[in-house]
Amino acid sequence: MDSEKVKRFTLFGLTWPIFIEIFLHMLMGNADTLMLSQYSDKAVAAVGVSNQVLSVVIVMFGFVAQGAAILISQNLGARNNQQAGEISVLSINLNLLFSLFLSVVLFFGAQYILHFMDLPQEIMSEASGYMQIVGGLIFIQALIMTLGAILRSYGYTKDTMNVTIGMNILNVIGNYFVIFGSFGFPVLGVEGVAYSTAISRFLGVIVLFYLFLKRNQGEIQVAYFFRFPKSYVKRLLQIGIPSAGEQISYNASQMVITYFVAQLGTPNCTVILK
Image (cartoon, rainbow, N blue to C red; front, side, top):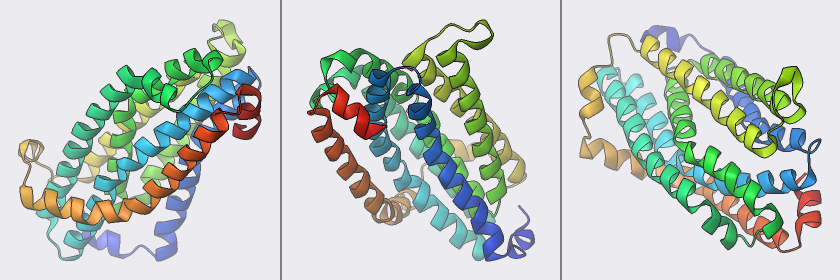
């Protein structure tokens, strides 16, 4: 990458796309809930509770992503471009392995997790179905977070913002088709919204990975994908775990609140989660 180009960015030029990207990531989950409110109140409750659980899992990927962003920035500042490239690939590998494990847990353990949340039985089927689809493919979101953090570290904040905008647009369009049955599409409700979310994220991660390779021409070697330097892993976790700890505690508190809300029953749960 051209490090001189990165230096010419202003603080505002780097940060305003990040602000929009964060806002759109938050909006993506809320768009599912908002559009489902036109379909069924039970569907809103089912997706709302599932998303609270999934949000805690997603924050866990920040351990590696935030640690990688800091280490990559440090190495780029020191003109250690090769080490920055190695850390970039290592962070992708680590989050992929970790997220694949969590994807298996969420897919096969969806009902157990929701039972633990004391979810009303009448919405259990829809909630577990949503969690199995979105949660079972949660590794895609881990890759999105990691690739986004890498690109931002190199100064390409607009790339990640544009991809996030595209994912939101695709998600809303997909939701519209499967919720309202437009253009002959079957009305799939919660299941359809889950597939819409998963497909939009899948397309997003393909574009991000393409941009990652394009922006790193000459700095990323195939051999990097088969290395796990212990010193880098240790540094990533030493920086990343404290950095993501605050978000973990906040999302965990929201999940606890949702647990108590779920005990109020489906009608009250729906009103609060809307």
